[in-house]
Length: 235
Image (cartoon, rainbow, N blue to C red; front, top):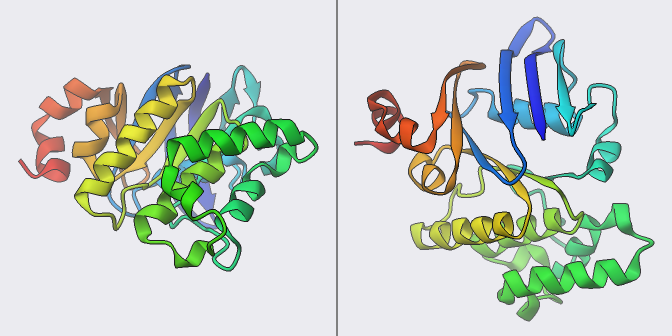
């Protein structure tokens, strides 16, 4: 479904990611592990069209994305839930969700169905649909960010650090919903520092260090790897 082949990204003379290869198959949950600044967010920006590769190519369902604009990439079926949520704090929950459906803005019936679906996944958002997004708790804001990304009806959803700053119980709930979204047919690419939670739900993973992929394998293989355990799981 998604392939990154020999992709490098530079910001001026600085190489942010260097000759990486990633493969995401339809229906999978794939996790990118690594500390802050390891290259995960740059990889997401490159898939979304916000950063352009200096080398290599990004393919989605066989089509090259390198020359496509971010809005064209959303229309093709890639939705992103960015790190830090990037909500519109003074707008209501419902207005934020509608912004997520902007690419389908003429399809009123579809937007209503998508809204109903998000409210079913996150009942608290339905209760607070007329509240300002900025008034929500951290966990509720993360639910809203995921809901907004879902409104574009993505085939592939990029989730950038969804567990950051959340209490363990909320993280658990969040990952259960991510699994449910996946079971309903959306492929998931997840960037996470919380390896323990992410590897429990992922099919496979890639470990980033200093802009390179230093390790990849199934979740079981990464869980069993001593270096991964020491660096990310603390065991």
